[in-house]
Structure formats: structure tokens, C-alpha cells
Amino acid sequence: MGRSVESIRQGVNAATGRWARSARALPDGKQQASGEKLAALAKSHSSEAFFVCEDPLEAALFSVVVELLRCRDEQGRKRGEEEPHVDR
Image (cartoon, rainbow, N blue to C red; front, side, top):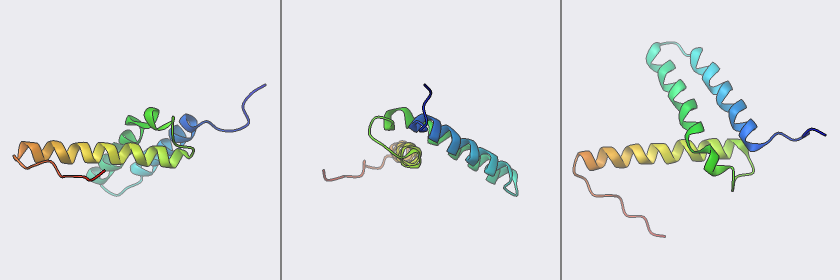
């Protein structure tokens, strides 16, 4: 018998598909490219998030934030800045 409940992976794929279609509706090329990048970022770490997230949107947002922080840290290292300190 088939699944009656959508998996997290299916939910992320559905959400990012909607985000990519929404990006194409944005007014100019730069905004469209940013929207498409957002959809791609949402998928980049969503596999890892499947293990702990019960909500597809949460998994997608986790993935986006991880990638944004990684990019920020890489840019800071290129400029010679210290890594931000985070208390755990």
C-alpha cells in the first residue's frame, strides 16, 4: 500500500519547485536569478535536515541558512576577518 503522507524530501522538493516557479515571475533577471539560487540553496542540505526536521519548510530553511552562513564566513576569511564567536 502506498504512502498517504508526504515525506520530508517530497515536501522540500514541492516547496523548492514552487519557489523556482515564483522566481521566474519576478520582474528582472537579477531577481529571478536570486530566486532560483534560493530554491537551489534550499535543496543543498535538506538531506541532512530530513533526519531531524518534521516540517519540509523547516528543512528547506535550515538548508538555506547553513549555506548563507557558509558564504558569509568564506567572504570574511577572504577579507582576513576573524570567524564570529558563537557560544554553545
